[in-house]
Image (cartoon, rainbow, N blue to C red):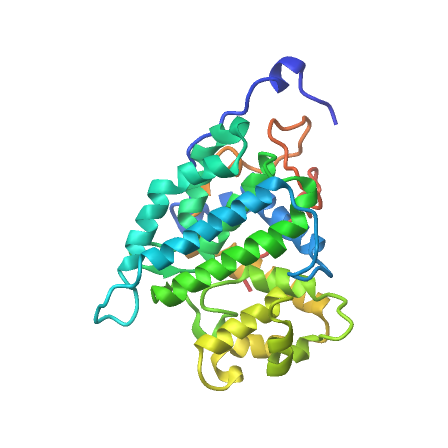
Length: 342
């Protein structure tokens, strides 16, 4: 692989304010062949591999920025206490969420200045847009996999600008993303947020998807817990704080009533799969087909310099901003075709 000239490589990377670019269903192929698609999918798979065998409460390397992001999420959580739900006749969509989100938009830039070292502050106008989108829509007061995806793109960008280090991969899942899950669950409950684009009982969950991927990845090779065990309430109660997948099951069981097989039919079917590795690979394919290939989700995705909509091409030179994580699933010279909807 050849390198750039010294003159080119010394130029600072130009960050941009990202924009929505997928305007019609006909634009989906642009996304599925883009650098952003392969960067994002590579990020999901790289962290999926890193987290195997690692519990949420386990020790792992953490750079200072990891703790900074967690402290930022803690502050966002404190705002919920300061902005209680409004008394209103509607069952769903408490209007106080709009006040919470307005505070997010007013403060996120300053919060990121506290998170990032000063030499990375110039990246904030680009990455803050993903943070704005990470917690739900203030107009509709809903939350779904697109908002989850925005936060994951924020985390991906944090690797790309070298705010996170290579050794942070496990902590990004078990510490940062898990803290994010705790926060958005509180937002969903306190402000009675509607599911965005829910498929009802035929989906894994009304709100999340990736914690099932990374959560099943954690459990690959576990000596005791098999997929059939996650419908066992005793197992869930004992291990929900250690494994993200079981934490998801616990939350679903708290917010839904009736037999599990009825309110979560898709997950009930997953419990019959023979191994966590098969669950994990199946969920990755499902995510590609049911989230990454769906226009209602991708129309809301923002594209900038870090996650561009430009076509994925063989790389003959070193990029200006190179991802600081390894394990991307694609060969730069021969990217595999994206999964088609089943």
